[in-house]
Length: 269
Ligand SMILES: [Zn+2]
Image (tube, rainbow, N blue to C red):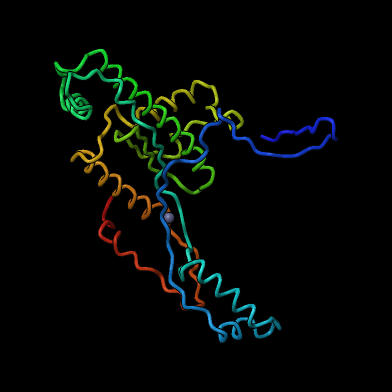
């Protein structure tokens, strides 16, 4: 927001300042996982400068300093490709104070009992437990809606991207989905809201539904399984989404950093 400042009694002047809009929606995800391809480079020498700039009559020493500062800033690594494979939004979990505890019972025990029980256990107030979980679902839904907006932005920024992973969490409770370009509703960017139309509303509902009804709880075996599945999808996206990389540089001994960790996932479909 730009505002005008009036210095009363002195003179009228325009000044500009930025004031964050408390109603503004998040424009950046809380987490992104980025696939990068890079290579190491040799430290530039005066011979490199002479080789590269011999016909241009440049100041060799200042040119070398320039190349050396670039080299240091990059830690000797040049990134030649990057793309986003996961976008996520983290919300807080509902306050634990929402529970009514039995005397002497720890808050963590109450949460564990609720998560492990098919029905609300005897020692937890049924209404309170239900309310707490309803609040959790609302926060997860809000996180999902945020990722929906980020996905829309993602597919604008990366016109060739066809899929991305969306992750939504509230405290340790989380959900994820693989989102295809055509699954994302249209947005009205001035308001940050989805365009009102029947078709868009359906896309929005389907987007939410693609996360499923279940949420996972970090550190559980089920959650670890899902993280492994998500990782496999990431490798699938990395392997499928770009057939061609840009031409790699050949100067300063550029050597591609090997891609060994993902090699074992080449067969992932
Ligand atoms: Zn990539």
